[in-house]
Image (cartoon, rainbow, N blue to C red; front, side, top):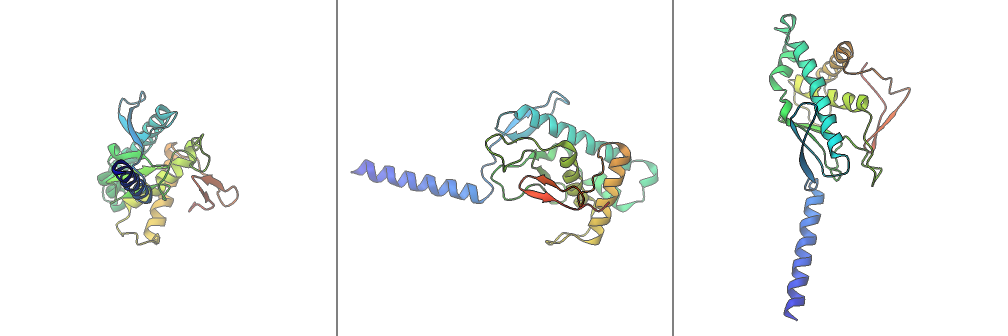
Length: 199
């Protein structure tokens, strides 16, 4: 009888803990995987093809580093938004998002962390990877927050949209993003639909 009560208490406690983790974005289910592309370690989902996720994050990081290097040119020295990006971008803080998170992708505290959905979490159990150009559009959206002085309070400001547009244009010029007219050809992304672009 004692064992049954203890077992029931443990089961209830574990169930409560799991519900808590799920409600708070889950434990992340993250593991560190070393990329063969750049030799760096990335936090990715502990799912099949985790090496591919690490390679994608390495490519994303390299792409954003190209944008940051572009903005380090002397012609941008007095340009506040580009200098904010140069100052705030920390390449070691890019990671894959949890499958249980209610968010798809986000940046935390102006660059403290950039968390990205790389796999279509609506298509379990395969969780196929999202096309890289679509992920780059989302990454550039998140990076635009780093360029923006104003804090987002639920709505994106006109400053944010101007910075996002500029990033898309410059990333296209540099060759790390190919513009897409999402209003004409919407794209599914991790449970949502991209239907617009500031370009």
